[in-house]
Structures are given as C-alpha cells and as structure tokens.
Amino acid sequence: MTNTKCLITEKLYKILLEKGKSRENKPEHGGIFIGLIRGPHLEIDDLTFPSSDDNSKMFSFVRQERYHQKKALDAWKKSNFTKTYIGEWHTHPHGEAIPSTIDKNTWKKIVVRSKRSMVFAISTPLELKFFLGVLSIDNNQSFHLNPIDVDVVK
Image (cartoon, rainbow, N blue to C red; front, side):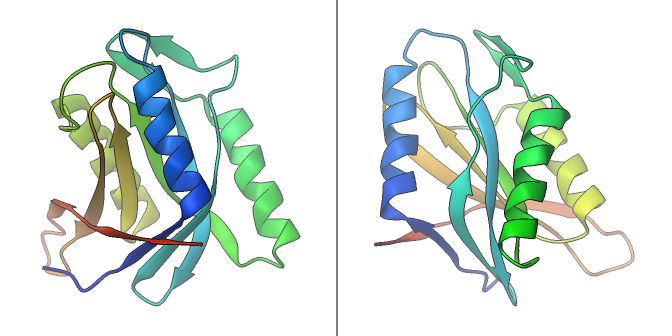
C-alpha cells in the first residue's frame, strides 16, 4: 500500500461530477489531469476536455495525443516547469465507476511509460472514483491499481 495523497481543486471535482451526470447514455468523454508532483503526492489543478480529434463512443474513449499533449506542455512552460501530466479521466455512461479491462491495460501502459505513480478517474451518472496506478519497486515492476480517496481543496 502506498502513502500517496492526491489533492484536487473543488472546481475540478465539481466539473468531473457534472461530466459523469451529463454523459448518461451518451458516448464516453475524457481527458488528462495536469498538476504538480510533490514527492509521492499528486495535486490535480487542471484538466483537459475532449477534442474533436478524440474518438468517443458509447463504450470507449480514445484520446488523441496532439491536443492533450500541447495543453500539458503549455502548462509545464507557463508554470516554470512545475506542472505536468499526472493522469487521466473519462466517463462511463452508466453504472458504477469500475475500470474495464481496457482501462486497466491502458493505465498500466501509462504508468510503465511514465515510471511513476499516476492518478486516474472514472465519472458516471452515479459516482466519481479515483484510482492510483503504481509500479512496485521489485525487479518485476508489477502494476498495482488501487482506489484512492482524494482531498478536495478550495
């Protein structure tokens, strides 16, 4: 188990809640989280929304890199190189916020590529849940995905 804490601004938390509710029975939407890495802790203070290039379907969302990467790079430069890509979010149009096999496999690839913990969220009409993806530090670098409580800050 990790001691990682995750913070999110109240404004962004409310946006994610609303996205889940407003996407009921509509194609999935998603984006990336931009924020700060403070030791083992993650602070979400911005996010991207779907672009016209993203592939949004009823049961899948495929984010295209160009738009979201540009937003992350712009934030990094504007923050004097302190803010960065720290995770992803997407909606599920119904039911509970349970990661699919595709979600888990995609998130594992992101964590392996990033070589650090990342935060992920699923927003549904019923709930908003956050997950922390981490690699163990043993030789196998096994991937672990755990639900995480976030602290909502003003």
